[in-house]
Amino acid sequence: MTSDAPQDATAALVLADGTVFWGRGVGATGRAVGEVCFNTSMTGYQEIVTDPSYAGQLIAFTFPHIGNVGANTEDLETRDAACRAVVLRAPVTEPSNWRAAQHLDAWLTNQDVVGISGVDTRALTRRIRDLGAPHGVVVHAPDGRFELDAAIQRAREWPGLNGMDLAREVTCRQLYTWDETTWDPATGYGRLVEPRYRVVAIDYGAKRNILRNLAAAGCQVTVVPATATVEDVMRHEPDGVFLSNGPGDPAATGEYAVPTVEKIVETGTPVFGICLGHQILARALGARTEKMHLGHRGANHPVKDLATGRVEITSQNHGFKVLPDSLPANAEATHVSLFDGSNEGLRLSDAPVFSVQYHPEASPGPHDSHYLFERFIEQIGERSSR
Image (cartoon, rainbow, N blue to C red; front, side, top):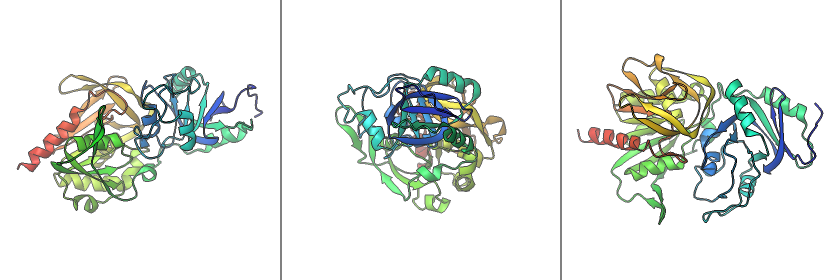
């Protein structure tokens, strides 16, 4: 395919079907391939880009003003950017925020994240909504050498997230402890001084703010890799086990994660899972998961608690779902999406085990679901008092 790039174009988003969106490059130069998805959050773009659950994906932001608060070292959800590229509507502007330490464009460059601005993200979002999340390549080439045919071929040959185990790529390499608590506007992040319980968090791609919420709830947190065995987990004598968020296909990650979770549940230890951890738990219970048409990504997703009828506005980032009809008799669906009716939570009737599909720490997003950390602590306390 010959390049019919506009004169001022320095970047392109190329989809596997040959569709091309032209724009101006931001961030690092080069090429990045992955699944194109959209995120509807109005805040927290730095947290989103560093969320390990976005590994393997090109993020199109539906909110047009990305970059207006700059970047800093305090809002990172992990040390390095997790997504492969960003797609923006408007050019990145000069930051206007007292916490800004760096221009977003410079930060993306330092993080080696390829980006494009000037894209009609409304048209792209409608396309994803109607046709599903496509494979694509973002090309940032200031020299004008876009090589569209090669980009299309690369997008078509990319295997996709089905069957892809990405937790191994984003998990920690060795265990570590965590004692940083949540943000206070006056003092910044705090430290846990007097832990009440010991919690082991299995890291499938854990966000820092998830760990902060556990620490703020009084938990001394030991984080172990996604490949940890039940012996690796239980030798810490945990009062509870947390199954983190993460990217990729739960069936692929489940090859090594499911046997561990199965045995942990058998011990009677309280278990709390979110996102990929929810899917891994479901598979450990014998349920099935499947790829979604376009997934849930944003900080404005309504979820109904089936027990209370209460509706929570939640923060989400997932492309696979649990099939509730496949849950065993001792497991019940507890939450449901009001967008598409998909499963958003489960619990066991005969064990202190529960999970949700969304991110209850909401970084970024609303705090409607913080009660889930309290529920986890209550279950730990009930078992510890026996």
